[in-house]
Amino acid sequence: MIEKSNIISKVNIWRLLFCFTCLVGLATIAGFFGKLYWLFEIASHFRVQYLFFLLLFLIAFLIGKKYKFALIAGLFVLLNTATILPLYFGSAQVSPKATRLRAMLLNVNSANRQHDRVAEVIREEDPDFFLVMEVTGTWLTKLTELLPDYQYKVSRPRHDNFGIAFFSRLEPEKMEILQIGSSVPSVLARLKYANGSLSVIGTHPLPPVGAEYAHSRNRQISDLAQKVKQISGPVVLIGDLNMTSWSPYFADLLEESNLRDSRQGFGIQPSWPDGLFFLYVPIDHCLVSREIKIVDRRVGPSIGSDHFPVTIDLAIDSSDL
Image (cartoon, rainbow, N blue to C red; front, side, top):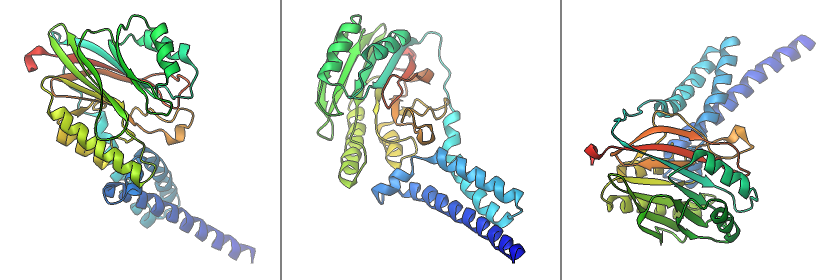
């Protein structure tokens, strides 16, 4: 009886592992159909997590000589790998004559009180301009006091999580707050640099935590693409877009705006959520027009927020304009 029970137990374990494999596989496939239903789009964001678990299942099936199960797991491994691997290729060659600029984006979390820590990290990175999201009146006052070198700024602080502020050492031709596709504020700035001017759009759409919010975010993403198309010259779009590079709406944004993902050639670089490494996803973005090359891109240290800051080194070659 004991031997029979052990055999049944072993069979059930393999079946259970295969059931988990199928569940992760279904989530993998659902992510490709994100435009059909907002929950499917949520499924597109966790490609790394799917790959991790599917690799574990694949190894277990191979060790257990369950080759049919291993084949299914292997197919799902390949699907997820095919979406992740391209981010590690495609970095551009940078001309030594190009103008170098440094950008930074920080979702500071409206409830965060580590103002000095945030200012310290900004000073260490020494960006030419930076975008701050979830800015309250207190955050705006503190950053203005702690970072006096950034004499040009535009802001719209709020009591919720959608206040925004933009700071620059570069002299602006214009800086304004505007609404792009939703009720949350965005920033549009045109900054002077040695050989021309650079347009920067900073934004923070609503998170897709329900059908209504998802629709609002998607409408804003679509309107952002149209806004970019109206701007001449080099453009940078930065912000917490509340979607990853694997969202079908992100793919639409790249195609419709003709911008490039700054992650290209630098890998995944997850930026959220700090403290929950098993859920890490890349939702803080910097997209650039074709005239701009990415010299370096990196995720910064913890700043007391649920997001990590992101720093991007840009190169603008006047010969490409």
